[in-house]
Image (cartoon, rainbow, N blue to C red; front, side, top):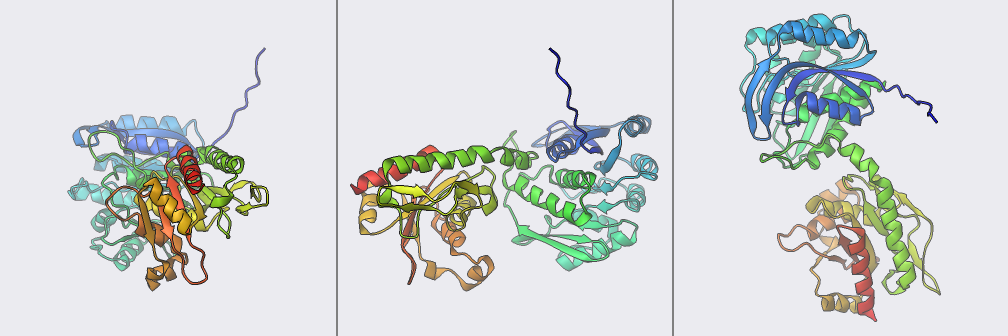
Length: 452
């Protein structure tokens, strides 16, 4: 018996960039990212580099004729819906690509790779001038602060400087400019998108050196979203959100700092069913063990976070919580994502300090429970809601994230349980946390046994 094929037709993207033998940046990063966003990635290799997580040891730029041949081969066969350029290696290559894309009927994202990580310029003035001609044909140009300075002459130290540089890049002919804020100091990163108006994308800075490939990956993500037909601002916002997660969970590979996680969103989505099933398994154990003694008056909830969760919507919990009945405990409804706010925000806050934590449960807390916790000899922590600064409370609107960060801020052993003694009108609670579902269930059942 033969089977009927079921072909799919993803939008085609083209990346024009150098090869990174270390796999973290360049063509390799572009292809991974485009495919992760549901696009079919094609490529034109401009140069071949010998590099790894520790640095570059060699590079060879392909002849312009070979680069042009690759480009012609791709566009003569594929319906290319978006093009992204990266490292173009020389003024001659920039000029050749500019000529080739002049009549392109698809969005063009130009990542102007012009400044090395060391801060050294990669082009002479002739090359920089050639780049200006390419930028004039761009749907979007995505320089970091150093590259924007090379292109515009504006030293970027503030968000207002970035806006001014973006406006100048638009005046040069680009439809839009995204001036990235990763190289600008500050606790928060502000990326500025300039079109006929200005949009700011603000996110917390991640303190890591594993940012290799971040520029390539961001521009490729945006190009893939444009290939799908997203509006420019939506594509940029989605690309920045994707990159924020990719930097938060970098790939620990090689002897150097590593690289951003190009497939992080895909892996996170793939873990959703497994995470929900794990939560259901914990709940079933509580039902079978008749865990009424652990259920607080407000109800209990079990929360599981996907491996790379960044939001409440990426945590699974019992809808309506778990309540006590005359015969035991009962989940009000099934498990779904986003069903918990209180415990989920606590877990996400704890993950800021210990990203490997994935499961949490809130339990009753009183003198008997405290005695049982001490008897078990677990590492404990606690926080006082009344000590939360007013500005943090106003910004977050929820004490749980702040409380978790405070509880897990020490340098000692990771707490097994965190005590929230409540405040006037608030029930005291203890939350148990664990890196996996089996451990969380075992800890809760050990606490239940210690109460007998």
